[in-house]
Amino acid sequence: MTRLPAVLALALLPLVLASLFWDPAMLRAVAERDPALARTILMELRLPRTALAVLIGGALGLGGAAMQGLLRNALASPDVLGPSTGASLGAVFAGYFLGGGVLAVAAGGMAGALVALALLLALAGPAAGTATLVLAGVAISALAGALVNLALSLAPSPYALYDVMFWLLGSLADRSLPQLGIAAPIILVAGALLLRQARSLDSLALGEDVAETLGVDVARLRWTVVVATGVMVGAGVAVAGSIGFVGLVVPHLVRPLVGNRPGATLLPAMLAGAVLLVAADMAVRVPVNGQELKLGVLTALLGAPFFLWLVVKGR
Image 1 (tube, one colour):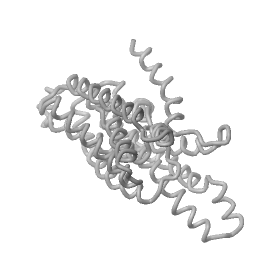
Image 2 (cartoon, helix red, strand yellow):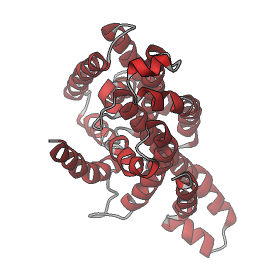
Image 3 (cartoon, one colour):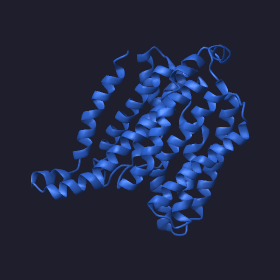
Image 4 (cartoon, one colour):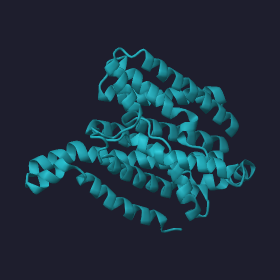
Protein backbone atom coordinates (compact mmCIF):
# COMPACT_ATOMS: atom_id res chain seq x y z
CA MET A 1 0.00 0.00 0.00
CA THR A 2 1.96 3.01 -1.29
CA ARG A 3 -0.33 5.51 0.44
CA LEU A 4 0.21 4.03 3.89
CA PRO A 5 2.94 6.52 4.98
CA ALA A 6 0.72 9.44 3.95
CA VAL A 7 -2.24 7.98 5.85
CA LEU A 8 -0.12 7.48 8.97
CA ALA A 9 1.32 10.98 8.72
CA LEU A 10 -2.20 12.42 8.48
CA ALA A 11 -3.20 10.37 11.54
CA LEU A 12 -0.15 11.61 13.45
CA LEU A 13 -0.76 15.34 12.86
CA PRO A 14 -4.06 15.69 14.81
CA LEU A 15 -2.66 13.51 17.60
CA VAL A 16 0.34 15.82 17.93
CA LEU A 17 -1.90 18.89 18.06
CA ALA A 18 -4.16 17.25 20.63
CA SER A 19 -1.15 16.20 22.72
CA LEU A 20 0.14 19.77 22.83
CA PHE A 21 -3.11 20.95 24.46
CA TRP A 22 -3.96 17.79 26.44
CA ASP A 23 -3.31 19.48 29.78
CA PRO A 24 -5.71 21.11 32.27
CA ALA A 25 -3.26 23.95 32.93
CA MET A 26 -2.92 24.66 29.20
CA LEU A 27 -6.69 24.63 28.68
CA ARG A 28 -7.14 26.91 31.67
CA ALA A 29 -4.54 29.35 30.33
CA VAL A 30 -6.25 29.41 26.93
CA ALA A 31 -9.69 29.86 28.51
CA GLU A 32 -8.43 32.72 30.71
CA ARG A 33 -6.68 34.32 27.73
CA ASP A 34 -3.29 34.27 29.39
CA PRO A 35 -0.89 34.00 26.42
CA ALA A 36 2.27 34.25 28.54
CA LEU A 37 1.31 31.30 30.72
CA ALA A 38 0.08 29.29 27.72
CA ARG A 39 3.35 29.94 25.90
CA THR A 40 5.40 28.87 28.92
CA ILE A 41 3.44 25.64 29.38
CA LEU A 42 3.61 24.89 25.67
CA MET A 43 7.34 25.47 25.25
CA GLU A 44 8.59 24.11 28.58
CA LEU A 45 6.28 21.12 29.12
CA ARG A 46 4.00 20.12 26.27
CA LEU A 47 6.35 20.62 23.30
CA PRO A 48 9.29 18.58 24.69
CA ARG A 49 6.99 15.78 25.82
CA THR A 50 5.10 15.56 22.53
CA ALA A 51 8.24 15.83 20.40
CA LEU A 52 9.96 13.10 22.42
CA ALA A 53 6.89 10.86 22.05
CA VAL A 54 7.06 11.29 18.26
CA LEU A 55 10.83 10.75 18.10
CA ILE A 56 11.07 7.82 20.52
CA GLY A 57 7.97 6.10 19.15
CA GLY A 58 9.34 6.48 15.63
CA ALA A 59 12.74 5.23 16.73
CA LEU A 60 11.30 2.13 18.39
CA GLY A 61 9.05 1.30 15.44
CA LEU A 62 11.81 1.86 12.90
CA GLY A 63 14.38 -0.03 14.98
CA GLY A 64 12.04 -2.98 15.42
CA ALA A 65 11.28 -3.17 11.70
CA ALA A 66 14.98 -2.96 10.84
CA MET A 67 15.96 -5.68 13.33
CA GLN A 68 13.20 -8.02 12.19
CA GLY A 69 14.24 -7.51 8.58
CA LEU A 70 17.91 -8.04 9.37
CA LEU A 71 17.45 -11.15 11.51
CA ARG A 72 14.50 -12.42 9.45
CA ASN A 73 12.82 -13.19 12.75
CA ALA A 74 9.34 -11.94 13.57
CA LEU A 75 10.11 -11.92 17.31
CA ALA A 76 13.19 -9.68 17.06
CA SER A 77 13.18 -6.21 18.61
CA PRO A 78 15.74 -3.54 19.52
CA ASP A 79 15.98 -5.02 23.01
CA VAL A 80 17.53 -8.21 21.61
CA LEU A 81 21.00 -6.73 21.10
CA GLY A 82 21.37 -5.11 24.51
CA PRO A 83 21.58 -1.33 23.94
CA SER A 84 18.31 -0.65 25.78
CA THR A 85 19.46 -2.43 28.93
CA GLY A 86 22.92 -0.94 28.56
CA ALA A 87 21.42 2.55 28.33
CA SER A 88 19.39 1.89 31.48
CA LEU A 89 22.52 0.80 33.32
CA GLY A 90 24.50 3.85 32.18
CA ALA A 91 21.74 6.27 33.14
CA VAL A 92 21.27 4.67 36.55
CA PHE A 93 25.00 4.80 37.25
CA ALA A 94 25.35 8.44 36.16
CA GLY A 95 22.25 9.62 37.96
CA TYR A 96 22.66 7.99 41.34
CA PHE A 97 26.30 7.08 41.79
CA LEU A 98 27.92 10.13 40.22
CA GLY A 99 25.35 12.64 41.43
CA GLY A 100 24.54 13.76 37.89
CA GLY A 101 21.63 15.86 36.75
CA VAL A 102 19.44 15.65 33.67
CA LEU A 103 22.25 16.00 31.17
CA ALA A 104 24.49 13.58 33.05
CA VAL A 105 21.75 10.91 33.12
CA ALA A 106 21.17 11.29 29.38
CA ALA A 107 24.91 11.16 28.67
CA GLY A 108 25.26 8.11 30.91
CA GLY A 109 22.45 6.38 29.04
CA MET A 110 24.10 7.01 25.69
CA ALA A 111 27.45 5.84 27.06
CA GLY A 112 25.82 2.65 28.34
CA ALA A 113 24.28 1.95 24.94
CA LEU A 114 27.64 2.47 23.20
CA VAL A 115 29.45 0.22 25.70
CA ALA A 116 26.84 -2.49 25.07
CA LEU A 117 27.43 -2.14 21.34
CA ALA A 118 31.21 -2.31 21.81
CA LEU A 119 30.80 -5.53 23.79
CA LEU A 120 28.51 -6.86 21.07
CA LEU A 121 31.13 -6.18 18.39
CA ALA A 122 33.86 -7.74 20.52
CA LEU A 123 31.84 -10.87 21.31
CA ALA A 124 30.33 -11.47 17.88
CA GLY A 125 33.30 -10.53 15.71
CA PRO A 126 33.30 -8.71 12.38
CA ALA A 127 31.72 -11.53 10.34
CA ALA A 128 29.20 -12.88 12.82
CA GLY A 129 26.02 -14.59 11.68
CA THR A 130 22.60 -13.65 12.94
CA ALA A 131 22.53 -16.49 15.50
CA THR A 132 25.79 -15.28 17.01
CA LEU A 133 24.48 -11.72 17.13
CA VAL A 134 21.33 -12.82 18.95
CA LEU A 135 23.25 -14.90 21.47
CA ALA A 136 25.71 -12.09 22.12
CA GLY A 137 22.84 -9.62 22.54
CA VAL A 138 21.03 -11.88 25.00
CA ALA A 139 24.22 -12.31 27.03
CA ILE A 140 24.83 -8.54 27.14
CA SER A 141 21.22 -7.85 28.12
CA ALA A 142 21.44 -10.39 30.93
CA LEU A 143 24.69 -8.91 32.22
CA ALA A 144 23.43 -5.32 32.05
CA GLY A 145 20.17 -6.33 33.73
CA ALA A 146 22.07 -7.97 36.56
CA LEU A 147 24.19 -4.85 37.02
CA VAL A 148 21.06 -2.67 37.09
CA ASN A 149 19.67 -4.88 39.86
CA LEU A 150 23.00 -4.58 41.68
CA ALA A 151 22.84 -0.79 41.36
CA LEU A 152 19.32 -0.83 42.78
CA SER A 153 20.41 -2.92 45.75
CA LEU A 154 23.32 -0.50 46.41
CA ALA A 155 21.27 2.68 46.03
CA PRO A 156 22.49 5.34 48.50
CA SER A 157 19.00 5.94 49.93
CA PRO A 158 15.49 4.52 49.72
CA TYR A 159 14.41 7.67 47.86
CA ALA A 160 17.08 7.12 45.21
CA LEU A 161 15.92 3.51 44.91
CA TYR A 162 12.34 4.60 44.29
CA ASP A 163 13.43 7.20 41.76
CA VAL A 164 15.47 4.63 39.81
CA MET A 165 12.63 2.12 39.82
CA PHE A 166 10.11 4.71 38.60
CA TRP A 167 12.51 5.91 35.90
CA LEU A 168 13.04 2.36 34.65
CA LEU A 169 9.28 2.01 34.18
CA GLY A 170 9.48 4.56 31.35
CA SER A 171 7.80 7.94 31.21
CA LEU A 172 7.79 11.22 29.29
CA ALA A 173 6.46 13.30 32.17
CA ASP A 174 8.47 16.39 33.12
CA ARG A 175 10.86 16.07 30.20
CA SER A 176 12.54 19.31 29.14
CA LEU A 177 14.02 21.04 26.11
CA PRO A 178 17.64 20.05 27.02
CA GLN A 179 16.65 16.37 26.97
CA LEU A 180 14.91 16.89 23.62
CA GLY A 181 18.04 18.62 22.34
CA ILE A 182 20.16 15.62 23.32
CA ALA A 183 17.92 12.89 21.90
CA ALA A 184 16.60 14.55 18.73
CA PRO A 185 19.81 14.87 16.65
CA ILE A 186 20.94 11.34 17.50
CA ILE A 187 17.59 9.77 16.67
CA LEU A 188 17.18 11.76 13.46
CA VAL A 189 20.65 10.95 12.10
CA ALA A 190 20.50 7.25 13.03
CA GLY A 191 16.93 6.99 11.72
CA ALA A 192 17.91 8.51 8.37
CA LEU A 193 20.77 6.01 8.11
CA LEU A 194 18.38 3.12 8.75
CA LEU A 195 15.86 4.33 6.17
CA ARG A 196 18.64 4.25 3.55
CA GLN A 197 19.00 0.48 4.09
CA ALA A 198 15.48 -0.31 2.82
CA ARG A 199 16.55 -1.71 -0.57
CA SER A 200 19.34 -3.77 0.98
CA LEU A 201 16.94 -5.29 3.51
CA ASP A 202 14.56 -6.25 0.70
CA SER A 203 17.47 -8.00 -1.05
CA LEU A 204 18.48 -9.74 2.18
CA ALA A 205 15.01 -11.26 2.45
CA LEU A 206 15.96 -13.44 -0.56
CA GLY A 207 18.92 -14.90 1.35
CA GLU A 208 22.46 -13.73 2.09
CA ASP A 209 23.94 -15.37 -1.02
CA VAL A 210 21.37 -13.77 -3.31
CA ALA A 211 21.85 -10.40 -1.60
CA GLU A 212 25.61 -10.63 -2.16
CA THR A 213 25.07 -11.30 -5.86
CA LEU A 214 22.82 -8.23 -6.01
CA GLY A 215 25.68 -6.10 -4.71
CA VAL A 216 24.73 -5.91 -1.04
CA ASP A 217 27.61 -6.00 1.45
CA VAL A 218 25.82 -8.17 4.01
CA ALA A 219 28.41 -7.73 6.77
CA ARG A 220 28.35 -3.96 6.37
CA LEU A 221 24.55 -3.94 6.28
CA ARG A 222 24.41 -6.02 9.46
CA TRP A 223 26.63 -3.71 11.46
CA THR A 224 25.04 -0.56 10.05
CA VAL A 225 21.62 -1.72 11.23
CA VAL A 226 22.97 -2.92 14.59
CA VAL A 227 24.87 0.28 15.41
CA ALA A 228 22.22 2.71 14.11
CA THR A 229 19.44 0.89 15.95
CA GLY A 230 21.44 0.64 19.16
CA VAL A 231 22.43 4.30 19.21
CA MET A 232 18.92 5.45 18.28
CA VAL A 233 17.16 3.32 20.86
CA GLY A 234 19.82 4.12 23.46
CA ALA A 235 19.15 7.83 23.04
CA GLY A 236 15.44 7.23 23.65
CA VAL A 237 16.03 5.08 26.72
CA ALA A 238 18.47 7.65 28.10
CA VAL A 239 15.79 10.34 28.32
CA ALA A 240 12.57 8.33 28.77
CA GLY A 241 13.52 5.06 30.47
CA SER A 242 12.53 1.64 29.19
CA ILE A 243 9.49 1.60 26.89
CA GLY A 244 9.04 -1.91 25.63
CA PHE A 245 7.10 -3.81 22.97
CA VAL A 246 6.62 -0.90 20.56
CA GLY A 247 9.43 -2.19 18.36
CA LEU A 248 7.89 -5.66 18.42
CA VAL A 249 4.23 -4.85 17.83
CA VAL A 250 4.33 -2.02 15.28
CA PRO A 251 6.17 -3.84 12.44
CA HIS A 252 3.64 -6.68 12.63
CA LEU A 253 0.77 -4.24 12.21
CA VAL A 254 2.15 -2.54 9.09
CA ARG A 255 4.09 -5.35 7.36
CA PRO A 256 1.03 -7.09 5.81
CA LEU A 257 -0.03 -3.72 4.35
CA VAL A 258 3.21 -3.36 2.36
CA GLY A 259 3.41 -6.86 0.92
CA ASN A 260 5.60 -8.22 3.75
CA ARG A 261 8.67 -6.47 2.33
CA PRO A 262 11.19 -5.65 5.09
CA GLY A 263 12.47 -2.51 3.40
CA ALA A 264 9.01 -1.15 2.63
CA THR A 265 8.07 -1.68 6.29
CA LEU A 266 10.64 0.80 7.64
CA LEU A 267 8.96 4.15 6.98
CA PRO A 268 5.39 3.03 7.87
CA ALA A 269 6.70 1.36 11.04
CA MET A 270 8.43 4.60 12.04
CA LEU A 271 5.25 6.62 11.56
CA ALA A 272 3.05 3.99 13.22
CA GLY A 273 5.41 3.86 16.20
CA ALA A 274 5.10 7.63 16.59
CA VAL A 275 1.30 7.40 16.36
CA LEU A 276 1.17 4.63 18.95
CA LEU A 277 3.44 6.32 21.48
CA VAL A 278 1.79 9.74 21.18
CA ALA A 279 -1.62 8.13 21.71
CA ALA A 280 -0.31 6.05 24.63
CA ASP A 281 1.30 9.11 26.22
CA MET A 282 -2.03 10.95 26.03
CA ALA A 283 -3.78 7.95 27.59
CA VAL A 284 -1.43 7.78 30.60
CA ARG A 285 -2.19 11.42 31.45
CA VAL A 286 -5.64 10.33 32.63
CA PRO A 287 -5.09 9.91 36.41
CA VAL A 288 -5.38 6.44 37.94
CA ASN A 289 -5.80 6.57 41.73
CA GLY A 290 -4.77 10.21 41.56
CA GLN A 291 -1.50 9.71 39.70
CA GLU A 292 -0.25 9.31 36.14
CA LEU A 293 0.34 5.79 34.88
CA LYS A 294 3.86 5.07 33.64
CA LEU A 295 4.16 4.92 29.86
CA GLY A 296 6.30 1.76 29.88
CA VAL A 297 3.66 0.00 31.97
CA LEU A 298 0.91 0.79 29.46
CA THR A 299 2.95 -0.31 26.44
CA ALA A 300 3.81 -3.55 28.25
CA LEU A 301 0.14 -4.18 29.06
CA LEU A 302 -0.67 -3.73 25.37
CA GLY A 303 2.37 -5.53 23.97
CA ALA A 304 2.75 -8.57 26.21
CA PRO A 305 -0.51 -10.26 25.09
CA PHE A 306 0.44 -9.55 21.48
CA PHE A 307 3.84 -11.15 22.06
CA LEU A 308 2.22 -14.25 23.58
CA TRP A 309 -0.12 -14.46 20.59
CA LEU A 310 2.89 -14.37 18.25
CA VAL A 311 4.56 -17.18 20.19
CA VAL A 312 1.43 -19.35 20.08
CA LYS A 313 0.91 -18.59 16.40
CA GLY A 314 4.52 -19.46 15.62
CA ARG A 315 4.27 -22.75 17.46
